[in-house]
Length: 536
Image 1: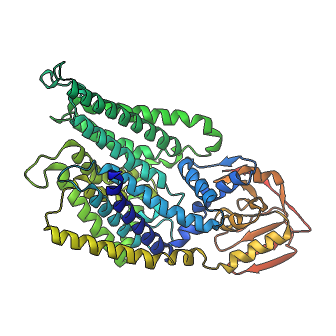
Image 2: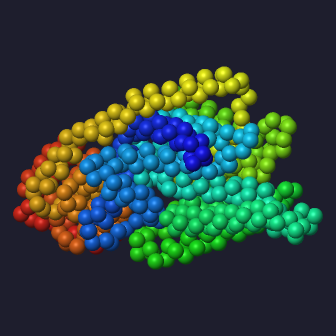
Image 3: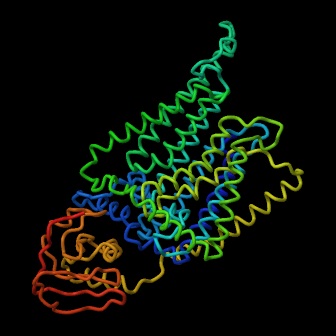
């Protein structure tokens, strides 16, 4: 109970930060990515299939979205009176809170001279500052922090990466308190047989270390199962750091234990993907094109230059640079000069700069062209603040005044921000409403292309009334329920500026064209159009 009271202020502060960040991002053009983007709606559409008992034949990408879907389903059931857009907003708040929980784990236990709650909140606040500088509506912009607010762009993988790192740090801390957890504990470190109380303590520490290793394996397996990108963001960087730790005088060969658990957990996660293979339409292997590494350099370089053209981008770059500098310093030496940096602290600090570097270089080496793959450049550097959460050397009076001021600012910020979330969620979209009303009233089934049809499809009474197709009217089996294609033919098409010009063989002229703002509905009621074979 005492521990819960000590942790409660941190969670309250994290909730206030989450509300402020979500409100700010949702009030900018970035809200399109939260509520209307074609990719961003996959979890909400899949949740409707589950809750409404639709036939389940979903085609996902290499990502299965299992944790994201579980969280969204729980929120949908707990908030029955909230619109689906409102649930997406609540889910964004939950994602930020989950990130705080993972950062708090990575900050280590509360010990004398340590303030892990304060520094975990500081790390989340730094992440929030990065997110609120991101205002572009483009999914391709180099604005990775705000992607954590979505249900699609790997929020579970971000949390899983920090969670895995935190668990490894907790194992190292537990090992440091008991030589029995060492692979090769020195004989002189072992306790005499008669030291019963000490033995019981060490046995408890050993059990705790074993439980932590089991938790690491479980998190790694689930994260790998749902998204193989987790290997690049967490398993590979942590494994490299542990391999380096094998040469350290303190951790030594004990690093083999968590390293082995990482490998076994990743293997188990890959094996667990086999039963889900029918849902996986792209293994991800095609994304690797090493021969395009020069184009990748140009692509990411252009994204960086574009980001630097905005004040928010410059501020974010400066903040990330400062955090990386802190991470490097804390990973190689003691910050106080009085005490050696322990292995757990050094691991967190090293990951904070090494993971972004490794991911960026890896993305370029593989010839990728997707800003979302670089999310570690946003969430990893902030961990530098939680790596060694030492007490701030201030007088008690100044410390209390600072705490009161920060608390007041967070409360006021959250109070001001809270009404902005429903305002952003409920912002009218007359064009989408026009399409939805027409389709609902028609009682018929039509089609549209991926970037065009996803939002109206989600908002319909029956999402199956809009079938996702390509420009040749073939069923487009990508992030959609393939059961929709059983209809065989459609009687209208929905298009907008993102629609690729239709290529329909021997297609008649539409009976009517209905304008709905940015959308147009081409009505073929008298001449149904047959669907072609599926493609992904």
